[in-house]
Image (cartoon, rainbow, N blue to C red; front, side, top):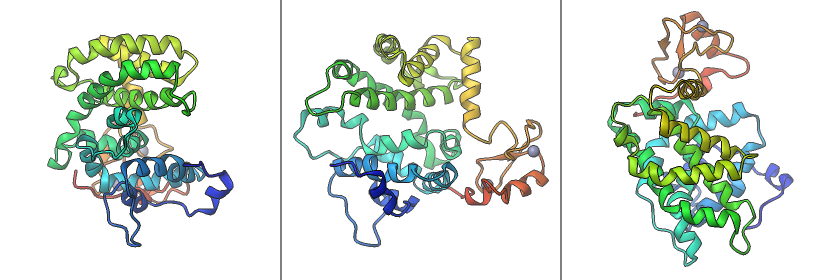
Length: 301
Ligand SMILES: [Zn+2]
Ligand SMILES: [Zn+2]
């Protein structure tokens, strides 16, 4: 598919959470819109829907991700774990599909949403599969790492030179976020088996060295730290805390102008944000820049 120009994208309407749900096949279109294949979904997501929304302010985009996650995150994870077959005869597409599909791209994109964090810590049945995510992502990456490692250096004919660096970066980023989130889980072998770590380690070391100017290197180094550290490593603990903080509004009062970390009370509707006082909750609800009322949704997890 041709990539549309920025001006062509600007002529399109801003896409809502329901549009993304239709694209992922999680909701029936009201306009009879149908996507014919998994490849078409992925291509439309990457070349049209995402770039279109990235043209708008982050706050406006975040409202879409909050609402999408509140309603459709469990179904997105289900699809990622039980992938629909891809109808292609291209061996590269078939080999990449398990870790390069529209559901994975969506998870990568919402991994820093407070709703993603809520999903990962939820004890509700709708989030029961959350705990399997790091293991599945790691296993799929371990199966593909030797191939991707080759293709990063020598991309297949017609593919952009950074194509495989890009999809590896996405997969590694998602794995890193998941690992960090589950760092304190008592059964680390269940989160990520040692045998999978042993396969991934040399690739992460190699990519960290080869792409030292790239975000991929940071992600690989961080994940290696996680592989080695466990709970006792001080550098890892700092890293863990910074990722936890990046799941906005949880360890600190959700009102942007307050740094209080004590006696936080959760928003009883969405459970994605906590406040030091009902005064700050009321101020945040109507905040002129990022009012919580635009992000506050109930979810079944
Ligand atoms: Zn406060
Ligand atoms: Zn709320």
